[in-house]
Amino acid sequence: MTVAAPALNRVVRDFKAEATGNKTIQLKSLRGKKVVIYFYPKDATPGCTTEGQNFRDLYAKFRRQNAVIFGVSRDSIASHEKFREKQKFPFDLISDPDEKICKQFDVIREKTLYGRKFMGVERSTFLIDENGKLRQEWRKVKVKGHADEVLEAVKNC
Image 1 (tube, rainbow, N blue to C red):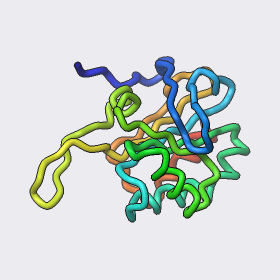
Image 2: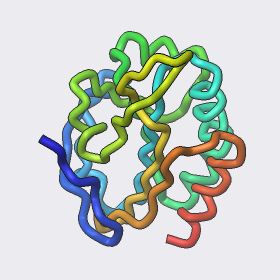
Image 3: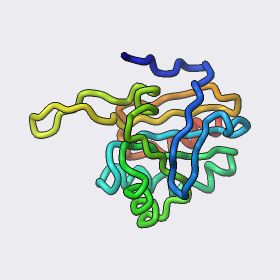
Image 4: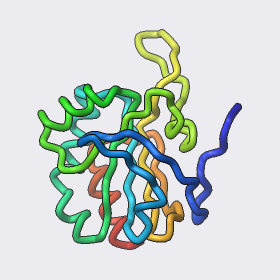
């Protein structure tokens, strides 16, 4: 069963998920804040580390804009905890091993690595406004400059 990704300017369907810091994140409980959710393929890999570091380095600026950030991958909470601690991420990472959130945002795509095709997470970011509406999405993200671009969108949201 394929689920359509959230449409721009529509309220994003609620979800509840396990996150680092022994937390459960529920989207609807974040109303009143801007929410940046970035999906990445795998903890502690070069591109994913750089992307997380870029969001980390701009974290205070996101907070000043009343925004929270969450990274999402299929990795386990244990893996996320190690990754978050090592990189000193001030935001939580959400574990989505059953791909429910990944499928909700339609980020599981066919990828090719060394000629082998497989289904994996396509690096993507979503900006949700204070009312729970999807305001912007970025697909097939290139890491360089991405966090800055998201911050500008948050400022204009």
